[in-house]
Image (cartoon, rainbow over all chains, first blue to last red; front, side, top):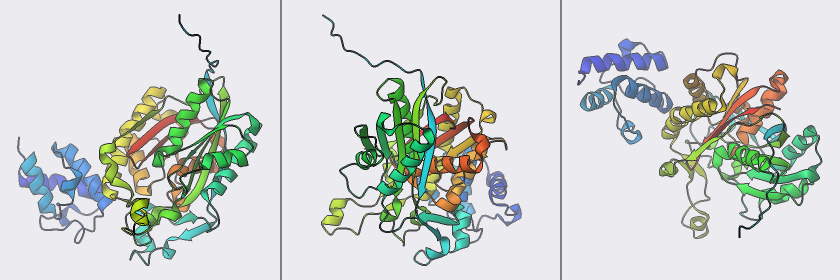
Length: 81
Length: 333
């Protein structure tokens, strides 16, 4: 069953909080992982692997480079779930 | 008529008898390296867990470090070096392809005419060597084996590279193995995935350098991809190694993963669900990532600082360029 944007954003925010301690309220679609949320590439990969498990999607390494914002990640997950 | 081919008598088990270590003479702090990579001590500590790394003097070679480490292990093992049957040196940084480091070291430690060979399995080299030494002793090919991980990675670093160079250190760790009445080395989980060979390794060949097509070849990696493989894929290998050894995580005294990066160690330990009773090696904090030397160096240090671990079980896992990996459970000497 395809997931909607709200569900994915909430789930992703939870994963980001678990990994980085960033408040879930800070995680908005337009935020850049690196510039706004200060998430480094190692934490990003941990979030990606956990997102794969949570949402039942596969996010290849090559694709991770394209996920610049939270919105990019949410779009990818909703399109591939 | 069936040929009669004599076979060596089998030995039931092997074990690590003793270990030795030698690190580069200089403790190089992060601040010495941050300029060319536009970084900071805080960034390096937060990203890797490293405060200082051991770097050798110009005139100190990996051969010197390997010899020192091996001599310590042999003395502690209390064996006659003339009875050593094989010397295996795992290394990726020998600046001279031949003669091998192992033949020179074997001679220096009094082991001539032992079999001697270098082996390139990157950061899995020491664990590959332990798997081989165990098999060689048990099949009667050698009575005692010396397995050394030896690297002078400072010879192949690019100070401006942000992907790996600042992690790297110089050192050698050695183990002497011999016959045992009780199991000392479990069945190894080892393998490769050459489809990912592009993720970490040298950036150019020697011939490209010779022909003026490149700068001096140095190590580089695609960090995030390597991190992902090192944690999640290798956690599966580690679990299989434990299962096949018949060991539960709570039965371990120590966990010694390749000291690739402090963040990898943290996440890896989390994936394995190790209880607090298991000592996790973090030699990387002051030694850096020494590739094939990292596991024996970390094990040696764990034993020096925690002698009560002697006789306990240690899960060791190496993983690196190739990509290649190897894991086994050993009884700590």
